[in-house]
Amino acid sequence: MDAKELIHKYNVPGPRYTSYPTVPFWKKNAFKPNEWLSEFKKAFILYPNSSIGLYIHLPFCESLCTFCGCHKRITKNHSVESPYIDALIEEWKLYLQHLPKEPVISELHFGGGTPTFFDPTELLRLLKGIFQVETMDPKQCDLSFEAHPNSTSKEHLQALFNFGFRRVSFGIQDYDPKVQQAIHRVQSFDEIKAVHEQSKHIGYTSINHDLVYGLPHQNVLGFEKTIDHTLLLKPERIALYGYAHVPWIKGTGQRGYDDKDLPKEHEKRALYEMACEKLIQHGYQAIGMDHFALPTDNLSRAFSSKKLHRNFMGYTTQTTKFLIGLGMSAISDCWTGFAQNEKTVEAYQAQIARGELAIFRGHVLTELELEIRSYILDIMCHFETSFRTDSRFIDTHEFIKSKLAPLVADGLVSIQDSTVTVTETGYPFVRNICMAFDLDLHHYHGNKPLFSATI
Ligand code: SF4
Figure (spheres, rainbow, N blue to C red):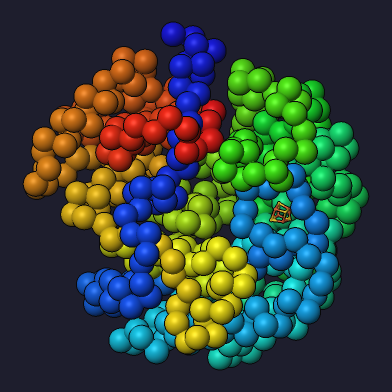
């Protein structure tokens, strides 16, 4: 089967596997905060030496980008900042009250929305509420934030750097003005260059650029210019995401253009392949499913030493069992369970004001799900996994091997004894390979795709 046929065959809706089970298959639609806390405490005792990651969702944006799939609130009214920061600090205190001991935070990420919507003084107030200190040692905690080039000031960059941040991620997507207009996110190369160079000058050691392929009006020639512009700035990391076109889930925000404006399946793949080839030629290492990093960056080192980890924040260099998500819609993970916060600002703040965590749904993993979770994590991070020989679920291993058989026949994976290895041909199909392990998916009989296309 040639590359085009493989793409056609495997371009089916599939999860991105930031968790297993994936969110649509979580069993607890009315997860009570005390149920979640008791699961979290149990895990905290089970894994006493694990530090935690902290994800803080800052949902406000001044204008809507029409390709956006994030949980956000569009507003130009900045009076929303202060009450939201108050709620985040209160939420953190609720966790501290219930945990048997104060957790060690090894990683913190501000995501959004647009974290740089907030005034630097509000962001610092939040950080002091979390850490109770004026600065953090960057060697003790990996601090990072997402930044919109249009709203990132020198004050933001300097204040967060002074606190201990060394990583910043800029949302670029594409430099082509026609594409930028279609997605309603206009930002020139000169503006991005200025904020990128300012970050370097201040001392940030790891700058990420998010690029997106599969957007309306993109073609190989235009996207190649975007890659060339990116290479001029040479960020340490690049995330190259496929645009997730799921208007049936995300509603009207994604309907600012017609389906006919989107590159077709093989054109979309050509965009990825061109970008991938070019980045590798220019010294980047391909990491996991959709990341690239210079060999000197920690992400590359973690990948090469098989220490790469994946959670709701995506790929990370910190292997923690716990992720606490603070803020509207944020997801927490205690390895044996997941929980998600209320998805509107009002519901989230109201629940915190009542003195309770704002959990509204979640899932507690069974023994089998925990095992499958570790296989999927291995495949996503290391392109390889081995079935446990001491497992109680040997029959399930056989079932998964039967689901992998067509992928073996197509040359995407090889199976040697109990070890499953993704071949180089299989790298772009890593989500499809994980789907063979996904027991929920094999029992799913709905008629509407829950996920965006894998390619
Ligand atoms: S892409 Fe980012 S800035 Fe744009 S609407 Fe979505 S969250 Fe806001």
